[in-house]
Length: 181
Length: 358
Image 1 (cartoon, chains in turn purple, orange):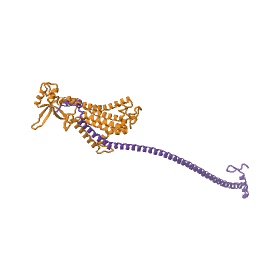
Image 2 (cartoon, one colour):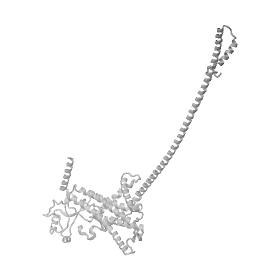
Image 3 (cartoon, each protein chain N blue to C red):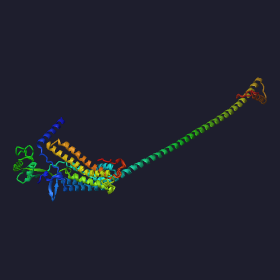
Image 4 (spheres, chains in turn cyan, yellow):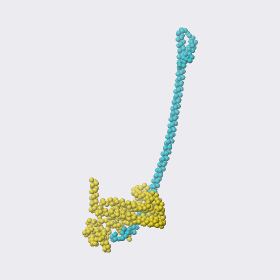
């Protein structure tokens, strides 16, 4: 075997020779072809697919976000409308209740006034009856007393009229009297 | 306490390695060693390693793509992460359209180089092989004095015809008063050689079975040629033959002509710089590791392995990125250089590589 340092001069001494170069070119070429095929067959479609999916996902999320925002706006609008309606209903109810209260109060007042009026009238009637009763009693008593005083019988009827007359002139029990006479 | 033990243990391992594991002075050859002849073609150890690397990568690619799914799992995860990161880098520099065109070449360069470089750090590379006898011819002895080489001992093992070739260690091989590593200019070299031969020793050369492919100039040159062809192809296919050719041969003025010639020269020089950059780095790394393994077999060698892992990927990255940048430059309009700040074909303005990026 020839020792390496004696074998060649020039570029050959660095080990460059055609067969080895061609062999390494073929080696690298095989890898290059294999890798190109693998990238085209597997990597690039996968990257594209993944990119597409990510874009779709982003778009979907964007749409979802938009839809959410829209829905939120709608909900807010709906809520505010509902709130207004509720407010209206409440106001109406308050007005109605106020009205009903007022009416109730009015009718109660009217009733009570009516009752008071009626009671007053009854009292008046009662009083008038009592007064007339009393007057009659008083006339009798007066006559009786006068009879006793004068010891004689009086014409009950004639005297009764006189007394009636006097009493009518006398001031009335209700305070109004006939003081004007 | 533990730390002291660790330091002590390291020292002991270091000293033991130094005492018992030292091999012969490594034989460092720039040329790849020839293992056998296949017809007119000498099969070198770097060819064998090259085939081994390619076969391993083919198997890996097969395993990774066997069950290729959109949602990755297992080994596909790893492949995809590496490829996608690299793809993003390439498209970031060259733009989406050109990046996709350039990617197969650039990625193959990167992954082949990094894989080959890292593989060459495995044990067995450069040290396991067979020993070639060097029987000097009379005229060689006359011309050079003697053959330089490592002295080996051929030891017969047992009754059967089996031999163990033992590399002589510098400490225990003294045939004469001098070292048996016979020098070129030793006048008594011939006698020493015969003396040693009679003792069953011979001068030989360890021919490793595996050697890092990029430590053989042919491999970086082959990759550089592929990169060169790819760059020219991209340029021509994008701009057209004549537009692209005008970059190199331009008769519109003396300055343009001169610039064209410079471009042409730089194009050729690229080939050389590509080749020798990778070769120089990887060969130097190999030498450093061999020398440190020779000097201090254990412990001290480790940082250099770390360094070589780093250098291995950096060199691959440089080779691939330069190819990419040259590709981007080749597809950019050189004809209208006067409008400044224009972007190459399909390259986003911000990503355009500035002129003279190399």
